[in-house]
Length: 508
View (tube, rainbow, N blue to C red):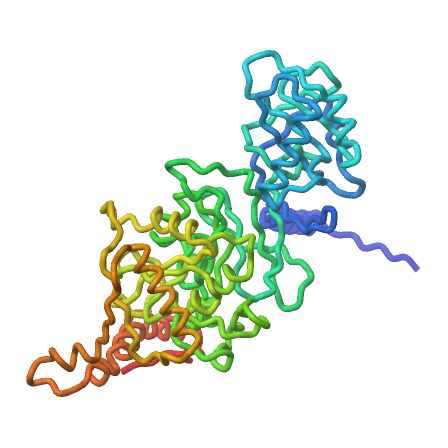
């Protein structure tokens, strides 16, 4: 049985007002977090922030280029100065893009946009290009200038570099293409992408993997190294104690991560690398607040990353564990930043078999970084090749501008505490001998304990190990508790009824 209920005029107005308010607030809160796409079995992420708009006539050509059931379709932008761009140029471009970039693949030839950089009339041989590209499913061949063949005239709202993109068939908006890689070694805590406004956004894309997140990397074709940006396009991971604008900082501690909001500024050390052209792809895992934890007993809030060497289960060392493991494991990553207070760069570099360094304290500013002890804290960079590591450090450490025209002529070699019969000692001895030969000098054995015993003040009877025994522990415990622990406890207590967070702090 049907029943009808009548509302008064005032009631209807109130209901409509409430619905309109609810509807408008709901729509206003919607955020496009991008889209995950699979092309030829490879997962991709299309950024939710457009970088340009593709204008084409007739507009219906956009819809015809779209794949069935999808708004987005792939597109390749090609810059050329060849007047009669044709089959040979298409093949050479495809080969060059494929060898230089792990994001680009043949699926992005679904549509092609030619940008002519020459001065003569542009006459692309579109017929031959379409014939060669037909196995790739090319549906649309566009150029900025009308060509002699059957290319379609189109225009971008602003210039874009070479490379793969995704285009919305509905709006014509163009989005950068990111390839998604699984973080099988659990090296990352927060993968991220640029917000194109000087900050970063957490990556929301995920693919199906056991316990792992996906990391999105942009096409290398978007970037060209210059004198001003020597690191352009190099993919960078940063230890999760460095604050990054738009991202939360965890310091390897869940309570800290959920207590504080996204950061509104990027620390000077990381910003320097970004200004040099490096591309941040995420934050890497760290021992809780960069302290010394055991694997994996003390790794409670986040899991210890997996060292890729050997069987993949060795201790990656810390506290820059994620940065070291990521460089050791992932060829698609170029550089990773870590910190070193008592060995946190040198340890992971040795365990993963990669290049890493501890520079002099003060080499880079450590503002907007979770401190351990400012007396000892410094920042380093990991890389798999010595040449890339050298390039990054020269671009990074701007506080040291002296030019050294010659190599050092002294080498000091400490064998203290080493087992002379071990295979490692033999390898180190070989390296030191070759280094001395390269420098055309002789190395000098340096035994600090013996030198102290022979030269210490008369009123001091302790050995140097006894004298310095707890120096590091006292400095790091007091500094970190006063600079981080106590403020953290106070902030946490203010929001959690006076309780103390779970965490590892030592105070004296």
